[in-house]
Each structure stands twice: as C-alpha cells, then as structure tokens.
Length: 242
Image (cartoon, rainbow, N blue to C red; front, top):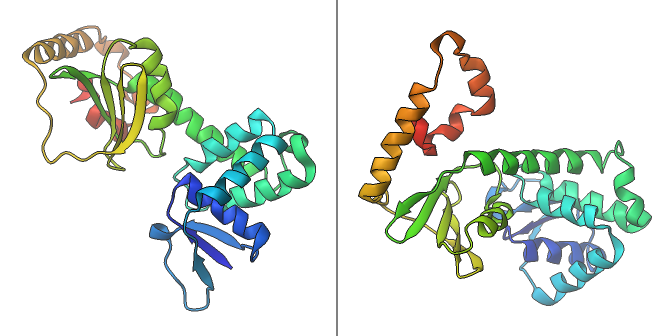
C-alpha cells in the first residue's frame, strides 16, 4: 500500500502509526507530489495528533539523539523519496535500537545519512549567505533553498539578534519564520510586491556593493571557484550579486 499524507511531520508520524497498526506501507509520499498510477494502490492518511504523539514518544524512547536529528534533517529534504527512506530507516531502527547509526553502509541507513548531510550542508551554506535588510522596523531576508531549512536556521539568528525583530522568508515554499521578543513561529507567507527597504538600507547596500567590487583583485579572479562557493541559483537574493 502506498500511503499519501499532507506533508506535515504530524502527518508523516501518523502514517508510521498506520504502518504498524493497520496495513504495511510499501512507500510514503506527500500527496501533492504524487501522481497516481493505474496499478498503484494508494491511500490518503489524515494527520492525527494522538497517533503521531505516540509514535514520537516511541522514537524518543528508542533512538539516540543522533538518530532523531537524522530523522529531522532528512524529513526536511527536498528528495521525493525521503519519506520512504525514513520509513525503512525507522523500521530497521526499531529492530536494532541505538546501534542504528553505527551501521553506516547498511542499505536503509546510507540514504538517510546522505540526505541528512545534504540538508545540513545547505543550512551551513545559508548561514553564511543570508543577508538581512531593514524594512520598516523589521529585518527581512528572502532565500530560496533547495531544502526546507528555515526552521533549522532561526535559532542561529535568534541567538545573535535577540533584541531585533526579523523575518526569514522562504520564497520557494511561500512560508517564513517570524522572530520577535525571544520567540519565533513558522507561518505561510506571501507578498505580492517586493518590500521597500529604508533609505538607510539603500545607502548601506550601495556601500557594501562598492566594497565588494573594490576588494576584488582582477588578476586573481577565479569565477569557477566563486561559483563553487556561491552557486548562481543562490545569488538572486544576495546583495553583492544583485
């Protein structure tokens, strides 16, 4: 049976519950990403907070912190098959317990480790590439990451910008994390027009662009290396490249 769900973590854990207490899942996909085939047998599972909480508690009791992190990071991956990989990973983990992540080359462990590392790498990259701009009394930043990473980034900036209010906007997924007064939350977020930055911000942007241009040494220009560190797909929201 192919299980489909709404894409939420609650929904995913509910599917894991159904896998154990109802019919075994052969694969799991987000409903909006799945194209129903003629011979595929599929079933949509609605998120159930009671069932998901039971599975969540079981994961916490059974697995190590490293495994829980691997589940979280892989769940946020953009890979279409990540939920099915996690199903097999969790199923195997329930059999062998906290030794799970020592079995690096096992066929169900390896893909989860690989996806988790890709997500972690993208988080690390965007912590260096993200640029805030002053919009009214709020700091605003737009990014378009491959993976769903803004919730993994917010604590880094909340720790450094405790007294500020800021928004990190994932334009690709039309959602944002909004931080103020020591708290943050995730919300749907869509703007029809680009936000207008302050005159002070325009001035600082011009200074920054000028500095970026002036420190470049033409004789040592290496566009291939620059592309490696800052791929072009990330540049549309980085001040010095706009």
